[in-house]
Amino acid sequence: MRMIATGLLLFMAASFLAARELSALFPHPAWGFAIAFTEAAMVGGLADWFAVTALFRHPLGLPIPHTAIIPENKDRIADTMAAFLRTNFLTPAVVARRIQGFNLAQAAGNMLIEQRSGTQSRLRDGAANLLADLLESLDEEQFGGMVKSGLKKQLTKLNLAPLLGQLLQTAIADRRHPPVLDAFIRWAALTIEANEDLMRDIIHKRAGALLRWTGLDDKVANAVLDGIYKLLAETLVIPDHPIRAKIEEGLATLAHSLLHDPEMQEKVARLKEEVLANPAMSHWLDGMWERTRGGLLRAVRNPQGLMKGSLGLSIEQLGRTLVEDEELQLLVNRFARRTLVGSVSRYGDEIVRIVSETVKRWDARTVTGRIEGAVGRDLQFIRINGTLVGGLVGVLIHTVDRLL
Image 1 (cartoon, rainbow, N blue to C red):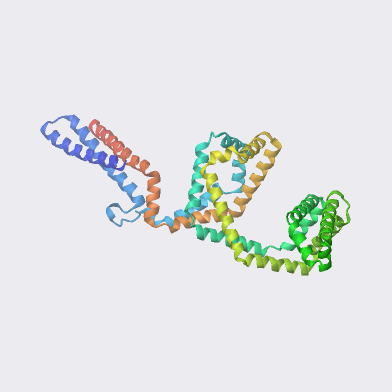
Image 2: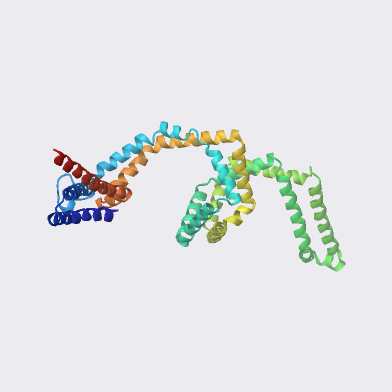
């Protein structure tokens, strides 16, 4: 557009010279109108070129007063822009009014349903590729070290004993421990059965020479093993067996100690520190991070496959619930409005301060380039209009002059 506007101005200059020469060779009253048009068009085009250029730089590099207006006043423009943004957009009343009729919950539900059905595959695939590229661009060792360091720091701060005590106490109160206890008893029986020959050999070695000479050691081993099997079976099938009661009593005592005994809590804390300091823990965290990162990469590289599975079904169900449940929509929309309005109220000044400071940090050439790039075409139309309107005004003045 700058080339077109400049070309039009040069065309008017060439036409003016040509009209002057032709009027001398071929005298005619019409040449006066042509000369008036082109002469006034040049004046209008040059005037508007000066005005447009003076906004962004010194015309022809000359330090003419009141030129290069935007570069010279970029700090004031930044403050004015930030104040305008704060006053007209980032106020609680304006934000609340703008989102009053917007059903955020329904829109989110429709998006989730469409993501499941694949109608927004470009958006989903684009977001997935972006996330995958981000994960692959991060330094594996550095980022993995940050993740592991952060996880270790959180585990170090965690007071583990009361948490374990509360979990154990809740499990006992809800009767969730009997299946675990039954599984432990079955595991113990299978372990003894798998190592029966070893136990018989131990009893044989511990028995006296007399028992071995008489062959009673085999009977003792059989009796011991039968007794153990019988005890485990009875403990498994009898709900109020004394051993089961003792185990439950021990679990309750352990839960109470974890919650209220400082000595027990100190033991758990020391054990936690020893585990975290063990190199095996670091190796485990390394493996866990690599598996997690690999799983994320596989998932985001194949978003369609991910959405077809149970996760996609859950997302679709959540979307349908948001679309169909009006009461849930009301709660979600109310929460979103309060959150957004509260955020604007708390952080509005910080947001506009970021805008102001960002513009102020730009150098004059950056500010000029970005503003001129945003409105440049319209500015060149001003030059074109000035050239044409100037020419028409010149014709009008020439006409009035001839009539008078």
